[in-house]
Length: 380
Image (cartoon, rainbow, N blue to C red; front, side, top):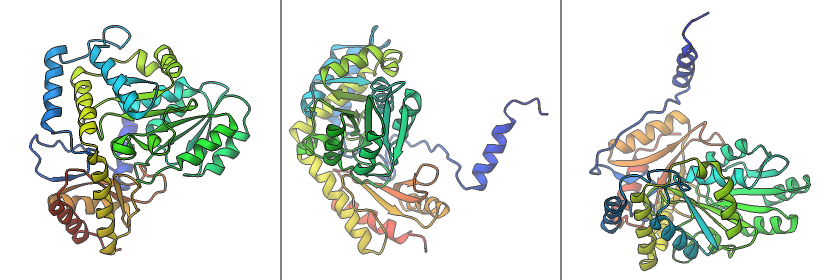
């Protein structure tokens, strides 16, 4: 028997290499050298001068870090402003800002469930929701993707507290959940509905107010949403929005809120500035959707298989995991950064490129991106 307690890691590494599933870090320089269709900067705000100035100003005023958890020293008036304006913009009674969207999902799922309750979770949900279900100690029913009838059936199998949870826009294929039908199922079955709107905020709804606003569900008594500040708002952090009593409950029970250092002031300041800019320039949301539609139409016209986007994510199928990796690498060599999704990150086992539609992409950049993706496409 080996005396090295980490021998097993070498075997895991060999298996990953044999399967072509090794992940590597690729640090990028400060100045962009590639046309970015891989990030989640949907509105093109990460480098916007108003946003970077707000981040720098918040760091000068409040310091580099939050200095402690939100319940000790980590709450500032800047956090309170951000929470108030997020809630008002998205149409909810109250909001709570956390250090990441991942932490927000863990907080909401675990604090709103527990032993003896039921979670009904879409098979395509983000890993943070999956982990929240695992940590919750609740019974979890994973139902087929975007299937309200399956949600209803699962809810009817349980007596007691229940929560249905779904992404609003799924990050792999960019398709939207049937939120109106899910909400009706939850109403009739007496369950709460939790929606992760990470990919909807800033893109869907009037002026980018999100998927729940678009579906007429914002502010409902039985509805809670989570957000990330790191996509359309170009910053970092997450938030939970819902009825005031739900937010108060999270302040008192959510471990990823209570025991985590608060969001850094620079990130809070940048997110608040982005939210205010979106109010001034609501057309950015429509532009992101238009760019996604253009990418989809031109790629499919070129003979590639893509999923029609419901928001700003354009998914293009690849024939295999190895082909997807080579395709993404060839795109990089040609000057375009694209996402590469492959097992085990994709629930259906189908590898694909993932392209981000950004509101600030020009017509020339769209044409260049389509040309590169088409030209480097692997032969099926």
